[in-house]
Length: 126
Image (cartoon, rainbow, N blue to C red; front, side, top):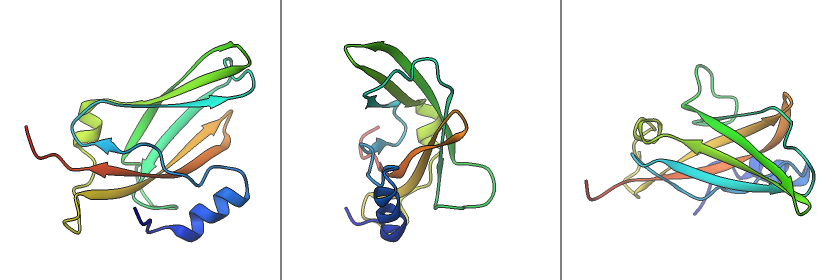
């Protein structure tokens, strides 16, 4: 899938701050994605948001619930989640291709940890 933000994503990758897509979100369904860290981040503070584009003004589209797991076997799994209500309120597909791109950023202890894009997939069956 082609991104609307290739320059931003490339810069994130160069800075080793992500630049990759999360698994797609299905509109109206609860969402979780897990990211592994090869260090102990279990006691750290995390926050994450979705927006239409980098530097978009106003309120975020949604705030992730970000939950760090326990440090075990040399890594910590951090889970990002959204409720079905949150994904149902995300922007509708604007160009009839079935997907709408949004961007995300996850902060660790108040600083950018990683960021990238994620596509919201439309639904057919109710």
